[in-house]
Image 1 (cartoon, rainbow over the protein chains, first blue to last red):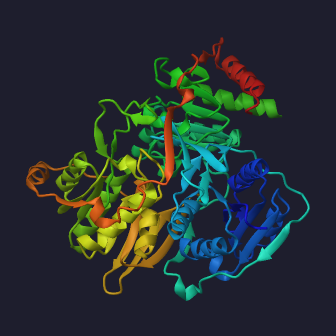
Image 2 (cartoon, rainbow over the protein chains, first blue to last red):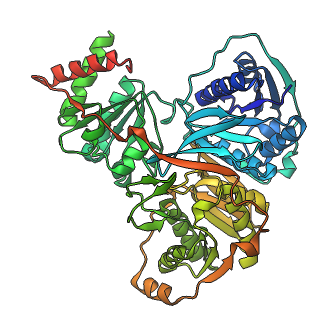
Image 3 (cartoon, rainbow over the protein chains, first blue to last red):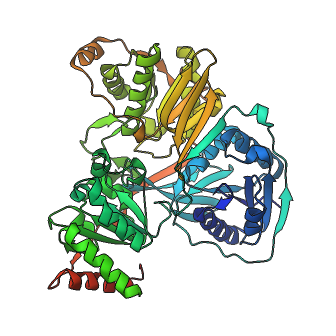
Length: 326
Length: 256
């Protein structure tokens, strides 16, 4: 009964990631096409609420491991448990969100199962029980259609914002509680601390991203850009030029050597739009470019262009947005 | 230190017969790997030892090794086979993990967090699992290495923020950009690199010929979002009217 499609539920200290719910939707779509069940796998410590939340979402079964050794994600303990569960239940497909933790887990699982995994899916199709995954390659300049060449277990990760968030508040599915494989003494990696973390929407999860580039001129110049992001309840991004100049930290960087985002709305403030930056944001639904230079490359692929000094325009835009919401 | 030779990040990509083509754009060391190279060299400066640079691919990939040696690596090893795009991450990881113990008794193996061509990011941690060494991915800082107790303490950059953790040597590390600012090859280094002998190991020596080089079927296509309509330049008498025009548009598009 647990042998159909698995969804690995990634969370941060018990807080469900939006992308995990999106992957449940993907699993349900595949399950309906292929006549399979959906089982969610959730591991952590003191996660009763999370388990309940998942059991009431659009899944058929839940396998849960709630143990002190699972409090921090470590690929060693999580990978060993998933490999053991795989051997017991033989799921056909394992889906995961494209997060850092899951990339480690996928690498571990693909070694243990001796299969090839496919990461960063942005579209899924089924042909003869094999999932065709569309994924960006060469930093999004090209798309690849990838599938396994035989009926191996198919391990696939899915980018945030590819599918809608799954339905919840359903009848509670059956939960199978399992024990971990490793004792703490068998796990080499120890987590000492977390620093500067936040579970608020990350760049890749946000439906609105406001980014600043060379045009902001300095660290203070990010102030209006940050304010606009806050006004819109969006995330703050930056171009490589701004990060390399030391105006803002690297975790805000959007582009080929930063994060890839695909929001509904991307507002580029003082960003020229080099090909490496495009690679990180080109799949955004609506792109607004605020730039003094009408010839800037970003103007070529923006939906709307505002030819203005960002320091003149953004404060007025914030004012208009605020007066609208009152 | 493992590097991959990839098309330059500014390359204009096209498709020929389902395969990627980068025209006459230059090949470069995968940009993520430069940070790993730099970190390996800094660890050498601080703790001693030497740095071996390893790559896998056809003869052309030797250039990546020479550039790495010009930056300061001591020794280069090419695992000679097909162009690296012929292999899936499972096969690549198996080959690399077989090569590492054969070349030397290493304490640390560095990778960039992913390559800018395939963008899978699976090889570093697959190699860690195959070697059965601890793997520390997305490292943004190496805090300390305790040579007496084989301990290592690092900071990792995860989706939500930073995580400090400890592990044991030997271990596999993949690094993020934040870790350092890579150096350029020196003039002396370039001269040295042109003369240095590159060690070559054939892929067949490392894995059985029966092992499939790829369990995946691939076909590549050009992204349709490449064709853009001209942008609508919003105009108005003053900033307020432009701002209002933009808000009206975005509201109609249902994005705010």
